[in-house]
Image 1: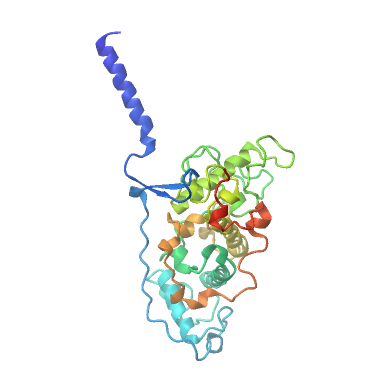
Image 2: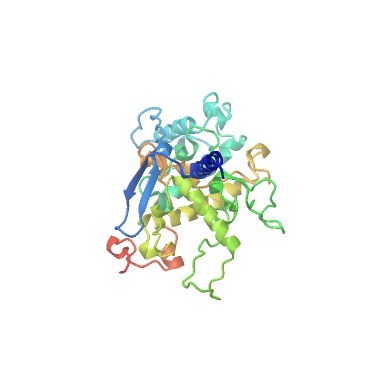
Length: 367
């Protein structure tokens, strides 16, 4: 081979190598050790892609003191928040207008200005149900939202409809049909990191009740734990979504020594466990129940309402809005206290999490 051909071949190989390495994302990375050395628990963040916290809007006016006549005593057809004081109710309505309604419409987005008690606008019926949902999240799902809580702004960010949402995908059968849902295998979709995975992990895991666990107790097949490759791929698709939604890698929750082992995982895995079930509760009990209420242009291609996933709230951050709580501005959204802070069972009942799961000393790998 001539010297010229040799140089050309080397140049071609070098160019191909650079092309292949293009997917490795050159540039500065920030590394944070989140577990004991040797456990594979390290967060690697591309500093160029860190999502900045959204600006928290100032309250429309200072929160008035509690007390005085209730909203239920002051207004007609009030089915939610009737026990809240009129002054605090009015403050919350002004906040909701700021958080959700188009600026050019304001209160008229939900209300008929000639008859504020009327339910003629579907947006008022939806807003009433969303208030119930938000109070449910803040009371029942503290296992996920902790004391930070959520408000309408957490998802809406000033938009009438949250930017990040999903519905059953176009071109695939509805999950309720006899054909089932094909999940768009090999479809280039950002939800699964453009990987060769089913592109719709939401229908089964964030709207349905399918089990997500695919790893067994044994390296060998067992009649007690049979999971198909297809199910495993759908699970990985969901994990890719959660990773991108929170802007983290797998070790934010899992230990690479054993992705399955709860006693080696970080406490964030339990928080995520409840988060998945919280999203199911939102989609099934609150949003899907509004299917007859939403107009056609507010539904997906199969006629189902747009639903939420992890990105709806998190938007690239491990804690929505950078962990800033807005509940102090809207105390009426805290909801009534419930007997239990989380649904019965939890990860301990479902996946045999050790009782001492939250003790760091017992989360280390056994030597």
